[in-house]
Image (cartoon, rainbow, N blue to C red; front, side):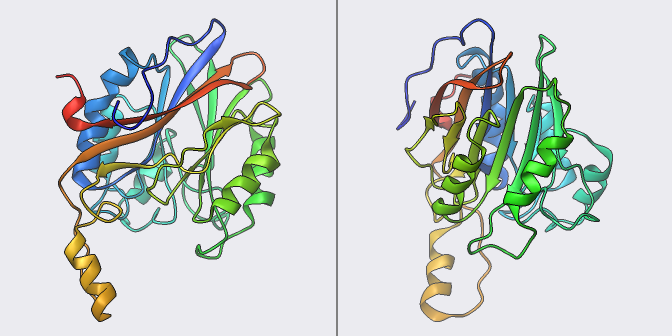
Length: 279
């Protein structure tokens, strides 16, 4: 795997392996995310695959057909972020489906589920939720208040719990990890599109990483074509940012959670180019 780690051995007995894909960007990101599912199931021994797809539609938002492509390809759950409603059509999916969640700290009247319950092939339940950070992000309810409230709504028998913390600042991400250490299986960050090398198991047993990175074209600036972004910065003129198409890669993070306690036993990063995927 390019720039990541060697494929891990199968999880220990009694553990569930979850894979969290970083922000899927545009059609190239959707394509590699769908292609990677079989490899993640076989080479990575993934029991469940979750993906942040809030940038799948032209780099901002998610359309209904992309949601269907991702889920039909075998992605078990989808999280969103600050661009959750950029494509208005996704509201119908959010209202009807239970394998996709909007950030928990949006206004309470916002459409969509605030956590999802997934099950492995062995029937082990896993809860997934997402939240927005506060620093350099649109104003929303305090995630440090809303996330614990949402965790209290999840049935107590569901021990494995994953939070996708969609935040800009690493300080926000680290605070959330420490705040929830020992109370949740994993706090994995998204939003910056840049994978951090700080994956770890915190003292209380919670898996943590500031940002799992981006799934999409790396020949660009955060997945967008370079020239228009530089033109906007250098001139101040409004310029449409198109999604790049070159050097498509997948960034993700896997972790193994104990099915009895919900605490993390192992964690690792994934970085693989589309050209490296089998088939």
